[in-house]
Length: 362
Image (spheres, rainbow, N blue to C red):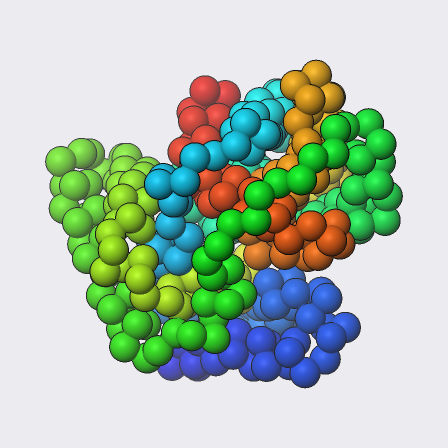
């Protein structure tokens, strides 16, 4: 069973990616939600072994620096006023939405922390917060399912009428087009040696983080471990020898896919009540759409550019991979840089923010 678990965990994502590329309708659903579904089915069919915990606990810590390596923040270019204000607006709106929604649903500190991380940087941050807090596996899978559902409705709203509405109520300005490779362009240029180098650096980050955790008690082991790995990933993303290589983002996301399938197969839904699930869905939906409404109000007050405001909100909710979709719908290539930059910052702080929210509410 251990061998079968290992094979399925690392080969199923490759199969799903291949199928998604072949069939556009499945690609529209996305690999993560498909892998969660397959993982749940595998768990119900009896895929249970000690290997699952090992895979789940190892993949995300390695994925964090890999994803951060692939998205270095370029400090040599000055951020525009709108980008900075949009980022701050999204951050304040998200935290305000979490506070409002928490007062209504009272889902618990761990849930609030995971949703805060997810609403700031996506699945990777929610997974990091989950590991740091030792949250329940079944609750985590339910939240991820709701994340995919609510986020899909959210992005459809943006594409259907959100962009046009924002351009009617907010200023419309042309942003400068930045030069350099996009994430999509980087994926076709990576070489095998690049993957090995990135994996080596990620392993060093994990080893260094482990050594740091030895200075603290076992009660805060995972919390310190995740925080140190995130800090090292951000710092090393500025190193020339690392940021000049390509492919780390893809490698990190593949590990996220492995984690998605594995953790879904571990969940036991027999202890999850329908009323609790409905409450979690309500909490998640309120956080996402209240934060969007507040962000648009703040953007109107601060006179933030319409396209920057919309793509910033999407970068927080759906993470950088969906930024090109919104930029294309806007027919504004310059918005891509703003969205990716804000999304990267969301990646960088999402874990810290989620842990902070859970700590304060706890």
